[in-house]
Amino acid sequence: MSDPVNHPAHYTFGKFEVIDVLEEFFPADPLLWQVGKYIARAGRKGSALEDLEKAEWYLRRRIEKEKAVGSQSQGEKNGTEIIVF
Image (cartoon, rainbow, N blue to C red; front, side, top):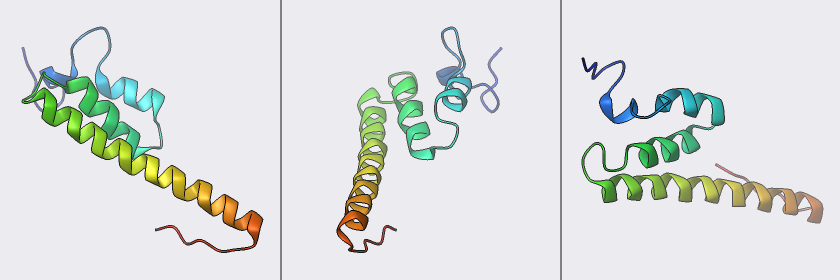
């Protein structure tokens, strides 16, 4: 029997439930949670392409944050201040 609220079919396929994997792999990174979620459900709920594009959007956002942190670290070495929002 399907439980669309607590255990939706598009997240409960295979050996592990997607939320269990996300909690283990990315306990404190909501952007990577979203990347993993959309990749895992691609083609299982609606359009696979749409889910992959959503994953890409979150991944790009995470990459930009990582670049900003890297720039901030470099700025501190050079004596400049960079503010990251």
